[in-house]
Each structure stands twice: as C-alpha cells, then as structure tokens.
Amino acid sequence: MNIEYRFLQKAIEDKNFVCFSYEGKSYKRVKPLKIVDDLVKCDVGSFEIRKIKKLTVLKEKF
Image (cartoon, rainbow, N blue to C red; front, side):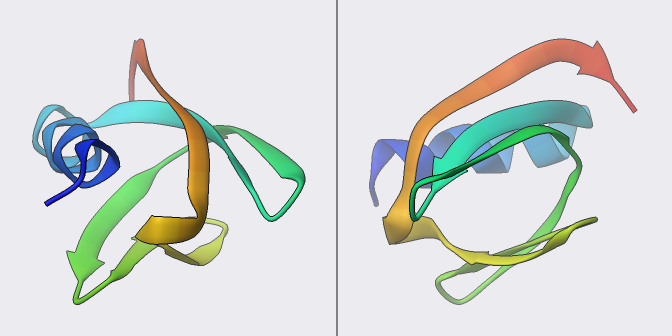
C-alpha cells in the first residue's frame, strides 16, 4: 500500500477535497468518492492511484 492510497482513504472517510497532478495535468478541489481496485473514482473522472503525484488533502470538506 503506497502513501497516496492511504491519504485518499482518509480523505474519503473525512469527506475532504484533494489536489493532485496526474499525467502532467493539475487537478484542484476534487471530491474523491471511492476506491475500486487501483482506481480512485472522483467527481471529475477516474484516476489510477499509482500515477497520482503531489497529492494534497485539503482541510475543506464537501
């Protein structure tokens, strides 16, 4: 289990927004909804956890 996976689990439990970069594109204020296999389902799409970089869990809740 990598650190991004654990941070995403905690953000989903606490219903916090996250920011990250994925394949060179930056995503801000994303709602992570659930984790299925190696994918995280968000309000803007699905992302492979291993390709997520610079993950930040924000203090803001949704």
